Image (cartoon, rainbow, N blue to C red):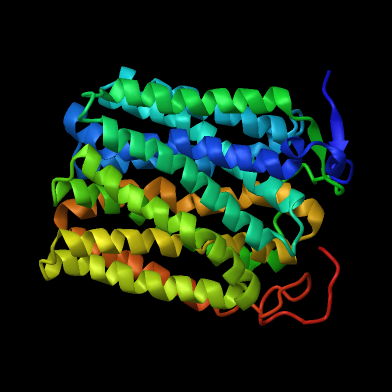
Length: 410
């Protein structure tokens, strides 16, 4: 029989059955499947299906369609609790990842990618909502930083296994995908059974919410989604296509990213709490402008693999500061808006993701450097938008243009 527990009563549960423990379990489970898929993807599609830049762009466009449709979460939570939806989505991600190598054709890869993407994006939408509902505002930056570090630690184990055993045991794509996806699916099923259903103090609005006072948050989400696509789709592809990275070499690069994330993510969470969202996001976007311009230099100036790999790690680290966008919204939001706005924001974040990968895939065939210069321009727009965040955002003081006096929710 399902047990329902309020957040206040959850404090009396054993530590491992509290909401924060569930958030950590989910933070550990999701990256195992997703990052196993990511680590092998470029080599898998090039070696098995002979993908080029246009094909990889199409694949990522298909992968992002469920993100664009994340607003559908609002309709689902009319009938399914957020916690249940998140864990079921995690099971779907794990199972679809496990079966990836069973479909080595273009059509098969696109289909299984769509299924895993539905699991990933619906899980991420719900997970962001639960984090902001279950974590106190004063604790959120620090705890989200630790959740990111936990995810990196789980992925680190997976990457070490791939890197150490890929050549030693002559592993196949099928075996690695089965194990990585299977572990995630099992952990999600355990979480479904082992945890009570947690009740946040504020019931969530179960319809689409668009508020004028959230406009800056929406704009930053849109630019974040557009800019991130270039990193996700093309930065790793460049390492394989231009420098001929093998599976264990690209995994080593991911490994360095993970170690850096484990060390710096908690520090970044503390930095957001200390410096505020405006300064933190501005620092992130300035760093990304320089990184993307330098990516272009890899092509125009002929910089080598060491420079490209260093930029890849820096790129990944700067993106980790995006947790400040979550805490900015938490500070300005009506508590009842968190779930529907998480879904709306995820859709906004993925608007550009539906058309950018395939369009930029065609541009990549003409000039890879131009793709990265375009990303630098996007980071500049994000920087200008971030400067409109007030030092102390609260409802009624969402931007520097707002009336600083508290205002009721619309």
